Length: 245
Length: 344
Image (tube, rainbow over all chains, first blue to last red; front, side, top):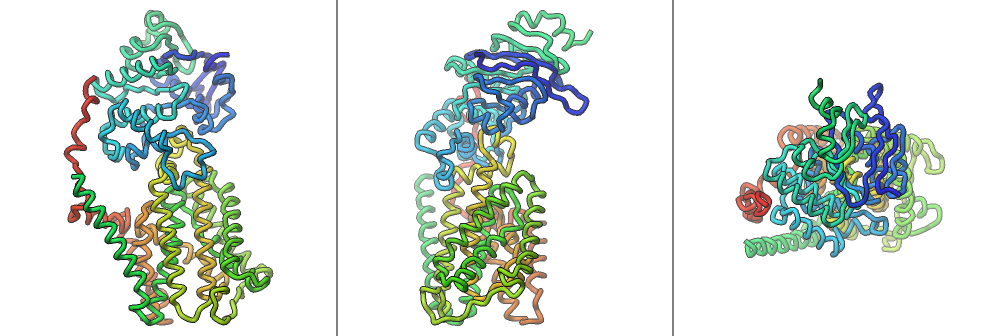
């Protein structure tokens, strides 16, 4: 049984085929990259996996379970967490409250939610992850008032709090200054060392080449290439997709 | 800095105790029934506004049908009293159960609708309920029910003096405010605000938004229904026109909107401004001035919408920012980049 297995995934928007019969596999403990020119269907694929879009054909198996049958919050509870291309945090909440919103949600605690914020053990974990990404000092600020890079780090910490098995990162370094990119790459490596599985969309080739063990390339919704970063870089199809003839 | 914060915490405790003391002593200072009546109605609207606030203010689901639960509470306890002889302090519980079942029913149907469509659906349901109650023999149609005046007794929750009503409504309001204050900081409060801001994101974090909206709706319905029973016992007369009309439904919404949605203080400030206006213009102008308070409401809503869309709470925050030294927000420190984030 594969960790994440996608076979023949298809998603259309009207006449446009955004994702076209894509097969891919992510094994446990890997960092897998997903690259491709703008509009090639990378984010759409992520949205299908996390249940935000219903897929129209194909299968998505996560640890042997068929995902598209589940609503997005159930998929998240299965241990599949994601970040968004533009950091999507709750701007009207403080950093700390953002973290509380990301704690793992179980049905047993449902009726306790009106009176408690988080179990002691989770509060400790929140502190731990704040420390991990270096936001401890800002935790009582409104998330809309910290810098964009810090919002990205916050989103990162939120994803980590629920202790997911598989983390989907949608352009973790876009719109972030080079120093913060370094910081984020260090975080990703640390997570990899902890045995997490990461599936990363990334435009920054330097980041992709230094992080990922395997890379998939999409173009116009189709998978055109897969393999190690070195192999992908030299594939004529990939070069054509990026630069044209 | 820590010392100052502690000090301001002390001020807050004393301020709160002072306000509570004033409210407890109020009926002994104002011995006329009318000022007491104004406060009773005020407390009731704080409760209703706060209940609406839980769903509408926190999770952003605008319900124009919250008065349905008010009517359900009032009708259930009154009919149990008149037909079976169940005293109202017991009848309030079936009322709350019926209201929460109704909330689950309405919520299950309507929470699939987003934004304004939810508001429209609840408005439609409210109007349907109104028509049904107007024509349904079981609930005595448009005549409604009159609770006969009995010998004053705690058993049947009837007294000649307004003082017991005053204290019941005060305690009711205090409990509800305390609950919302607690909820504001709880996980539920955070989830609801998250749902309001970005429901899709909340879902992808694993928040079951429908369940939490439903929970908020049920809590809102329970509180509103309780207030309904209280109202029925206070005015001793209920009919569809006084409980299920649209003006009442909108007043429940306007109170937290004017006061500040999604805040604990909002409904208190809103009710504190709007209810005395209604009650005093009614008493000053009598029957001829029936709509005067609505004119004033219109003006207030206009001013709030133009100058401070966050409501009276927004004005309060501005004033505190300008004059208050209560929260020495160390902005310089907060703005400074955090060590470790800028370089690895």
